[in-house]
Image 1: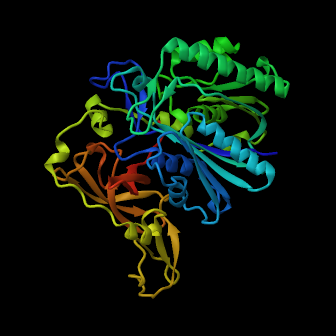
Image 2: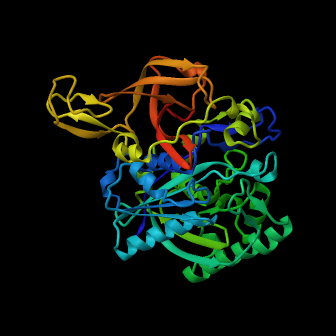
Image 3: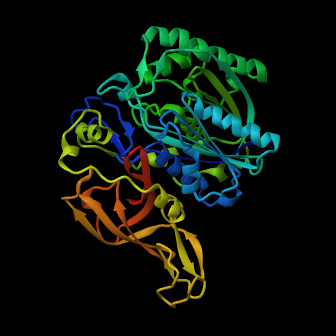
Amino acid sequence: MAGISAFGAYVPRYRLGAETDGWDSTGQRSVANFDEDSVSMAVAAGIDCLQGRDRQDIDGLLFATTTAPYAEKQCASIIATALDLRRDIFTADITDVLRAGTTALKSALDSVAAGSAKQVLVVASDNRQGAPKGEAERNSGDGAAAFIVSNEDVIAEQAGSYTITENMMDTWRSAGDQFVRSWEDRFALEEGLERILGEAVSGFMEKEGVSVKDVGKLALYSPDARRHSQLVRHLGFQPEQVQDPLFGRMGNTGAAFPLMLLAGALEDGPPDQLLLTVSYGDGSDVLGFRTTSKIRDGRPSLGVSGYLDSGQVLDSYETYAKWRDVWPTDSSSRRPQPQSPSVTALWRENDQNIRFHGAACNQCGYVQYPPQSVCVECQARDDSTPIRLSDQPGTVFTYSLDYLAGTVDTPLAIVVVDFEPGGRVLCMMTDRETSEVQIGLKVEMSFRKLRVVNGIHNYYWKAVPRRRAA
């Protein structure tokens, strides 16, 4: 039976919290760095999900988000390339609605059940913005979740689904809007969340012949903690049946939110437990899963809990505001505008820059990045094999801190990284405090956005300090 065979997640390192000057909120929320977006976070979640698995077995990739960096260009193709998946797979973006994550997951389940694919990677990622210091900004968060849907080695079998589709104008963002908009609170709760989610959950239970007491964990969408508690009571669930919504630690991550809660439930769930994932947005999707005896085999290296436990609170709200262009500054006018990247060069160097392939010499095994025709160790010519370096651990060999470079994150840290299987790369370092940068620092590679010029999002790999749960 089709189900989930592996899962992963990603939560950015940084948080806004009680210690953040100018934030004025006791709870924390995750915030993407200045060089992160929904695509880069999706790649990070995909790496967490694919640890120890053969990436050539993936037959398709579905990307769900409401904050795609491109309005007309597929983002799933960028993610598939960065994850070094096969070229002969199907990819699709599912976007523009908050329940895009569960829609993508259901589509993958249907595809596997129908036999058109054996393994489908589903990634949901979002970094929605609310107006500065407003309720939406306080309750939102940034993050991503990833699942491999298959009918082999399943850790959670599909246990039914139910969907309601309804035109509901309670939360929206038009083309060109920077911030999410919402309608009157009481209308959104009574006519939107309570009514639609109540109908969806009761419809699922009637269709599948189960009751509230049969549910082990409920991964329930809600815009904030207060309404989450109201919804739980309205639906008739007990507190011990509800997966922690992580308000005050992460926040509502948009299209990724119900899937991140599902990933959290899978991390600690026992076998033979019924899990319900309930999304919301112009209707609702309810997906049921029953954990199997293999549930312990699918735990990712970090997952939601690991990433949450390895976070750091920002010192100032102004740092976040600068990252997100919450309000205009004159810093950009002090330097010349960067040149537009060459689309031809981006295409030509796809394997080198996006797949992040080096070359291992077939004669002596020496690894070079970028790949070269001649091995510098044994001088063998045109005799090498591509090697993926994006998931290889590394160590800082040397570094430089540039306080004059025109960068949002001063000083600009440039590092030389030596990879464990061999190979060396000169790159930027991000997600770091200046005091952390030192020779011998253990790092890993992270897919990030270099800049956006002429509407072209230029992505590359940067080094980050290795994330480990506290």
